[in-house]
Image 1 (tube, one colour):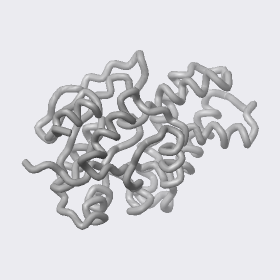
Image 2 (spheres, helix red, strand yellow; image 1 turned 135 degrees about the vertical axis):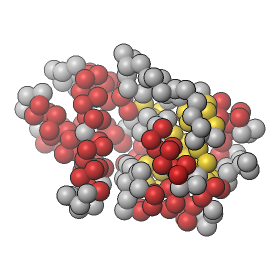
Image 3 (tube, helix red, strand yellow; image 1 turned 30 degrees about the vertical axis):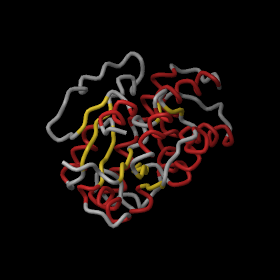
Amino acid sequence: MQKPKVLAFDVFGTVVNWHGSIAEEIKRIQLPVDPNEFASNWRKGYQPAMARVRSGELPWTKIDDLHRMILDQILEGFKISSLTEDAKSDLNRIWHRLQPWPDTVEGLRLLKQQFMIVTLSNGNLGLLANMAKNAALPWDLILSAEVFRHYKPDPETYLGVASTFDLLPEEVMLVASHKDDLLAAHQCGLQTAFIERPFEFGPSFTRNDLHHESFTNYHAKDFIDLARQLSV
């Protein structure tokens, strides 16, 4: 197996700690809810919201707007009516300010020495650019579902990366901490690397999917470990 030329990274959970960042924000603004429960509920609405776009129930809708729809629903569910419109908008933009995992920036800089590193996220372009600026993420290019008008795991997203760089699918590798994402990429002919993120869903959630899989070419503890395996 030859090394890939482009590494395409899932972002939410793989590159940045969405659960921890949201929980800390809920604590900071002193919302009267359990911060971990609030973070988990917000994320739970993510896949169903994208499914509504895929099915045609909703027209193409960027993640910022889907996040806001979910936020409004969970605020109602938690019976929170005290937030102003400005406060809701600022809270929704926490997704732009998610903090990287401790290994993320160093690992990306190592991998960037040898590979083109790009995002392949369902997050919209503005969100991903703000996140990169805030967290010092050294991307060579920001690619998003917004570019391809398809959300992962639609094949157009994975194959779109290869097309962007005029490469064969096997010359691109998806790096992700989610096995459904990796399986879909593998089925499109991409190489795959699984990154263990045991605390993605919060400190009290135990992941039971950190074992090796036949459809992953690499299995790494973190980005620095992946760089080591790729002989960077």
